[in-house]
Amino acid sequence: MSRRRQIYEGKAKILYEGPEPGTLIQYFKDDATAFNAQKKGTIQGKGVINNRISEYVFTRLNHIGVPNHFIRRLNMREQLVRQVEIIPIEVVVRNVAAGSISKRLGIAEGEPLPHTLLEYYYKDDALGDPLIAEEHIACFGWASNEEMQDISALAIRVNDFLCGMFSAINIRLIDFKLEFGRIWDGDYSRVILADEISPDGCRLWDMTTGEKLDKDRFRRDLGGEEEAYQEVARRLGVLQDDPGPSEVFDLNAHRGKLRNSKTSK
Ligand SMILES: Nc1ncnc2c1ncn2[C@@H]1O[C@H](COP(=O)(O)OP(=O)(O)OP(=O)(O)O)[C@@H](O)[C@H]1O
Ligand SMILES: [Mg+2]
Image (cartoon, rainbow, N blue to C red; front, side):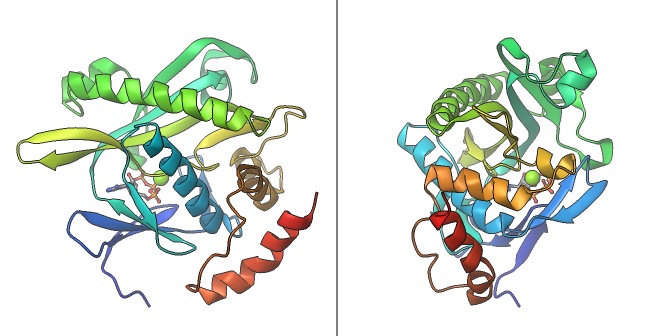
């Protein structure tokens, strides 16, 4: 069905060769997985919403000088990005205890951390993305010390920006995951932010009610995941304009919902 060469199919996205060398197309699926893909399902319309949210966040990060892979959105489910050499580390930024840190260290969910915490996980599905120390990163050469300095500084800047952005729409940013990659220019490389920022990889709690507006609704069988993702997009104001002519099928599938979410409230 696709006109392009598929490069990789992950759990949430498909990567296609881009129109120019050094570019890729990221296609956002509705597939959802949790607990290292032991739990699988779909969140209707998630791909469309995550494509928009990630576009919005990466564009704003670009404006404040956080280098990232986003070039432009192509249609409802696809965006053009710069191809990077992914650094095999998932960077988790935590403001408030939740999820694995609560389990591992016995800290109650919702307990604010004394200060923002950066954690690193080795990106390896077969190993279940284990938690690692910076010493492992240096020891195995997954990233240089200079790259880790850039990565940690960028992660903190992204956190500062996102905390403000979400608090303006009455959402508390509990934690989130980032991926970085290298761009080569001859013998030199620099680190930029890649992948996506969306409710798939963030914990977002409504500031007033504490309601979860992220993938924990799916992980914990809370229900209402479609509505939660839509609510985040609606508060960010990213589902306002027309999605464009492509993907008529998706347009028809989602138009009712999108219109309802605009008019309700
Ligand atoms: N700009 C980019 N250039 C190259 N690869 C990228 C870029 N941005 C993201 N990726 C990679 O594309 C894939 C996106 O697919 P998806 O998020 O579905 O993967 P995943 O199932 O989470 O698997 P993984 O464990 O590899 O992240 C990820 O492997 C991610 O690291
Ligand atoms: Mg992923």
